Image 1 (spheres, rainbow, N blue to C red):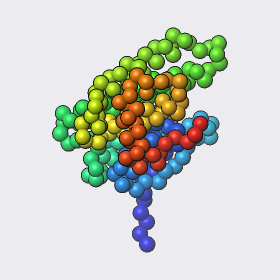
Image 2 (cartoon, helix red, strand yellow):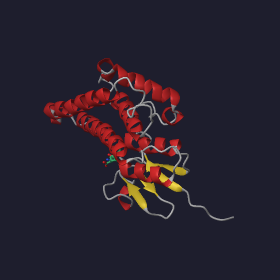
Image 3 (spheres, helix red, strand yellow):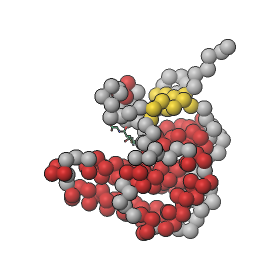
Image 4 (cartoon, rainbow, N blue to C red):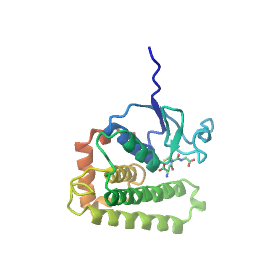
Length: 210
Ligand SMILES: N[C@@H](CCC(=O)N[C@@H](CS)C(=O)NCC(=O)O)C(=O)O
């Protein structure tokens, strides 16, 4: 029987960036082995695959590795035409990527808050936390205004911008549940409910209970 190499995705089950790629793989029906890694484990040497030692990492069928979720998502969207997540029209594509960058940027700020809060109390900087919280608030307001009363961020078309936004909102609930974003942005709350109800790729990849 011919040997068929299947792509491998290295990620943790709690990474919001890794979740983005797991959702993309499921939406596009792409076969890929999931290799669960613990980034905090001293025995876990990711630098062989990514000089930044971060997940997600995608090992392609020719052995080449890709890292950075936006790069991986764009590659996967290109290799399989099933259910395009980035429109082919350039202007539309840039709109989707900008919203993806905004959602990822909110996630980045949330990760910084989480890491700061994990430091011993006396070493934490309240100013730094406030600065990151402001980015989260401003980012959520911008995404909420973009969404308005549309079904998806690009009106009726489901895209990578929705996937990144859903992963970011799920991460806020998972790691920073004290942020009451639903009160300020009920349209984002409805959006997340819709994603979880209509897209099995989302409900199947929810982070494990903390
Ligand atoms: N911009 C990167 C962020 C990746 C990232 O920060 N991953 C975290 C897990 S959520 C990680 O691997 N952290 C380990 C570390 O920084 O040492 C992406 O989108 O892929």
